[in-house]
Image (tube, rainbow, N blue to C red; front, side):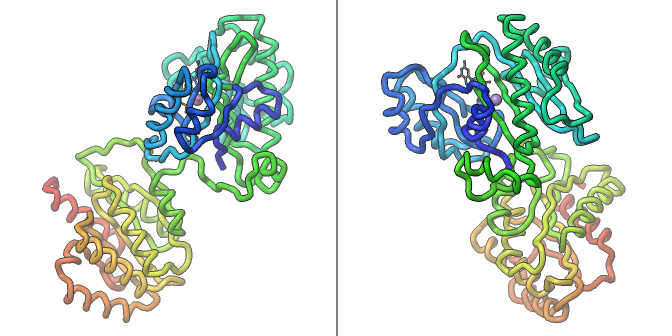
Length: 427
Ligand code: GDP
Ligand code: MN
């Protein structure tokens, strides 16, 4: 569960880390203008659960109320990497002579808590790692101590201070901040506790940005934190969800995008969306589509998603599962499979057919759908499918659903890929 920046700052502030003075959180540009008035310069920051806001126009500086209101109006209409900006955090701008990075996370390979610091803060830490790896110090704590051992804290602070203006005089203050970020990570069951940038001001280090991702498995221990932040329900798994993931959650099924939100489509490849029957089949489908692509199509096939309806979906939910993929411009083909156990082939095929008919009539995007169904309610599903194809052949033109299990899934996938490549004139 990811906290918003203002929430993460309250957590760090409670742990004794200085943060910029906040004027508030606003939803209306006029309110921002009024709050800023003739006051000091402010930073206006989009409250979205995604990083890299600065580069995307989601962090702006304003000298006074009128400018702040104008910037706020502009930002409130925007989307940042597809996330609508609905609320703005407004804080006094901090004058800084340097910017550091402090992050605490867990090494997924060995579960060691890991502290990463850099005096080259304010930019993406991955970029620093690539371009100036000597400006990063990484310390792994194999014993997972509740408090950062003093020797490690000193070493991390000295490394930071050596690369920052202010130098050695800053070491003590930096050591405190590093130890406090570490303590917060432990105390609140975090997956990530990060300050980027920690700005160096005349009054000492100030956390100008804050990121905290809580471990969902530890939420039951965090009643105090929920109380502090005024939260009543958990925002499960909202750490940087993609728009498709948000849409699926709202519709009530599980969905994971396999490609990065900012991936660029390779025009020589075929991107395959998957509507499988069940979670296991979902994982199998990802693997099998990749394998068939590697074996028969020179590796030019990319599975794009995991999906699972979880139990017996309704006709409307099945329709929405397909609609989500049809609406995704990166999807060229949908591979589907219904192994009717808990769920019914009848409901599945009705949902698919309804989706295709509705979208064709509305002039909405569709892509070829290849798949297979077998199991519960197969006779009525077969009857429905045959009738549907007779009644609306044009709407169902690009749909090939094999009934029964005489054809193996790999063959269905291969035919679908072949068809989709041919249709695009590439094969
Ligand atoms: P992010 O891009 O989502 O990580 O958003 P940040 O909160 O880190 O803001 C982006 C950048 O704006 C930071 O890296 C800083 O360079 C700058 N910034 C943010 N707040 C302040 C501030 O109070 N004073 C100054 N001087 N720069 C700031
Ligand atoms: Mn930042």
